[in-house]
Image (cartoon, rainbow, N blue to C red; front, side, top):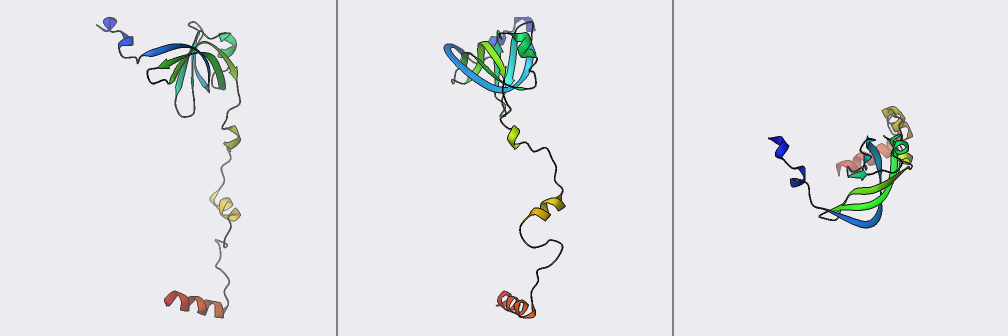
Length: 138
């Protein structure tokens, strides 16, 4: 029964263009036999890479950030869904400068925070305390 089902029935219309585009993301799928790869960006957009040039070299980049350039294949709404005859090269992870992998303790955060000492009270003399209480109760 499932042999008679055609996947293209459920796939959105795709438009092949001669426009060369570049997509960046993490290389997450590598198929050296079919020469097809896939990258995914940080917000979850996936771009399939068809007929990847120098696929054995590009395959070693799996799990890393890459830039892929090729002829664009767009869906019906104009979103890039695939690149044909893609060339893949490693690029720096754009989030790397912001990825601090150290974990600070609450005490360390509070010690570096401005304001009163969380371990003690503020120092008020008797006149200041009386003025504060008067202002607070009026």
